[in-house]
Image (cartoon, rainbow over all chains, first blue to last red; front, side):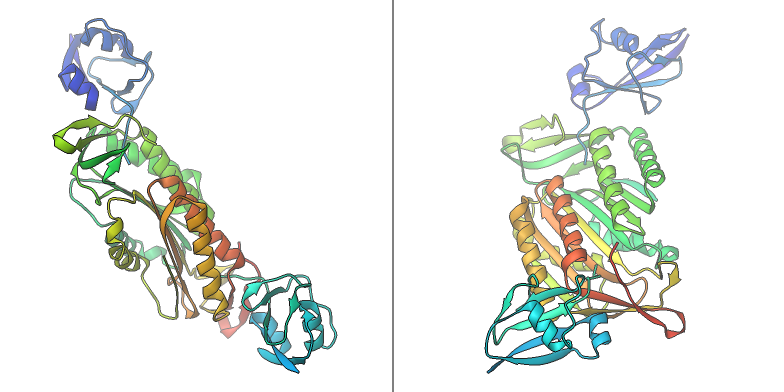
Length: 78
Length: 78
Length: 144
Length: 144
């Protein structure tokens, strides 16, 4: 068993009431599966952006044990 | 009789060997006519830009006694 | 090329002046510099804004802006780029972001500068939370 | 709004910093500033350039730049503009022109700034005479 680090930012972090959680897994999961497992089996909302190891990815990208996955709302910098 | 002030700039000034000349006239002339009268009856070259009283004009614009007419090559500022 | 996140207020013009002294080898080579400065306004969507908090994703935000700068340097005939962005608490009138592109000619300088700020606005992981009157907070939901 | 011709070298960034202090009533109103700086290169059309002389039409050049700034302020949703241009003798690395536009939003700031420099380049009565090696002089014949 290894862990996937899961991070949430901004309004999503506040809605979920957590900024980071660790998910134990022994096999690769898709980004969508990671979301469902840490969010009570709710499916990943379409507007939520996703990154693995600090690179933007799609919801069907595979996440390996040891990776860092991030979920966040549309960005509003600049 | 009143005068029209005629000015030349940049390479045109150097080619003609003069920066300013006064033209005596008792009646309005077009910009083209002003050019011909001060440039030995040569016709106004198409690439030369023209201004009357510091506003761009076309070659057929009328110039009145007392006006300032300027002739200059394409601009190269900035 | 430089990318920086800063939690301290900065003046865009003194920052540009200081940065250009590091480009001394390029003097006489670049003929065009285009800059864009984004400044915090005291109103947004019809409401007075008293302060703002800029959240980011430490690590990813820097990485994204570095990649963006490299892409601009590859895509346009430009000599250098600068991107500086505030994080944390910020107040009206303060600079949020500065982007700049140096080039031999003006067209690539303008295009690269515009590209940097557009991509930054639409893709860089930053999130604005505004403090309105009465300490009411709201997350800005989309970038214009 | 300001238009200035100057025969003295100037630093674009300290000039912008000083000019912005005169806009204090606007602080918190503008959210976007786009600037363009044109700098003299030490090469042009394949030849080394040692110096340049910038001729202008006293009276008409200022009038043209004033009208141009007014047109930009009418055509775009911008709050202010600044145009500064060198005249006379100038050397490589020195700033030739600075244009800037202040706006609430970035699109009009970029568009007005680009408009100002394009119109200035194509219509403002300035003429460049370059001094090449061996004191050879040539008039620049067209603007890129």
